[in-house]
Length: 334
Image (cartoon, rainbow, N blue to C red; front, side, top):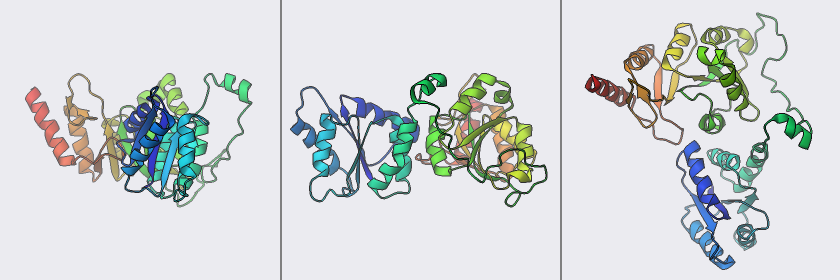
């Protein structure tokens, strides 16, 4: 695994490391090195070397640095020029999209240089202005990215068969928050879908939530918000046979309706179910009431398996133990 050093003036690197963990989960081989007012350049150099000494992989090191030309960058640059550090790479302009992208790229990439090349576009794309009209005034309209060739565009006649005529559901998740930072970055990077489809009657009727979800789309991925009846239709429409989709459900009840309607889902990630009145806390991210327990058990009886974890970096919770705890807590609650 490529090792990562986050370097900055002040506590910025420490804060962004913590923020990255909130979204992507705990990370190995990541160190934050900060320059404080009382430190000199040599002090910072010593801290950088101390951080690197903790890494198992000291051959491939990626430095994510706050500011080009600042002391952290200058000291990193000197280290990169030393013999034996040919595979060390630095990227400046440290921001959260850059950190998250780097974590995702590490999952299947052993080269610091390749990760640096991959994260640069996402780091730049993470800088946006709202309202969008102001950004267009400053930078001009952005060139439209070419649409993926395997996503239907325009009016495709009903009955047209694309691919094998069956939508590919690469990932399905129950999450009260639906599309948010952890899903838009971590999970999307892992699944690499053509479309993210939020399946919820409530959200499909709520224009404000619907707009916010669509705006949270990760770069290059289309996001749709549809009622449960629509995802049932889509699952049977041969025009989506060449589409790789990630489905997000707000509740297990919505998922059950989709399954009963014929949506073919074999495994579900139980990511997050918010606590509310009458629910008991089962894991650090999941709370259930009796209706939730009954619904999830019915889904399991249909042959669907559950992967219980908030983010991919977490260890999965044993499903049977989670359900047993939920039942015990609900019984004790009376």
